Image (cartoon, rainbow, N blue to C red; front, side, top):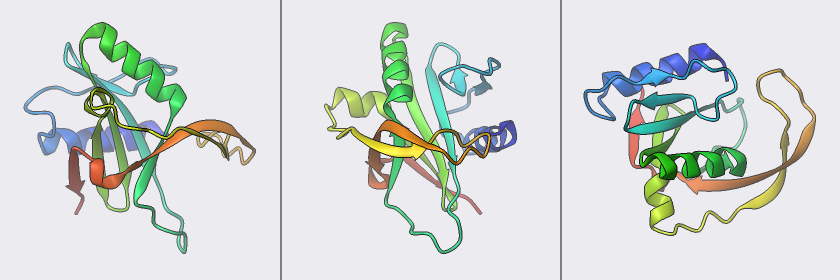
Length: 145
């Protein structure tokens, strides 16, 4: 995802006090496993899912096991929370991944063929281990105007 989209999403989270009156920092390391953090509080993985015209609208959002597993363990080790934030269809959905994990949510991980990368317009597909999380499980749904 591009930096502009991440910055826009972080700005909306701040403006709407989704995490309270705190400073949300964009991670400065290009290859970090998370995109933003609130010091001594949480880490945040951010996605911007764009639906092409005429495509089906889904009632769940996808997270890769690679991102989930690293970030959930990192959050446990640091005694902080892990959030998955996704802008999709005119809303920002915030999932409390720590809470879902602690409640033993069944992520129903599956191998599926997915684009290798969304950053470089690489259309090749590779197998990825993914979960589809129902939008109704979002901790916060932030409508964008």
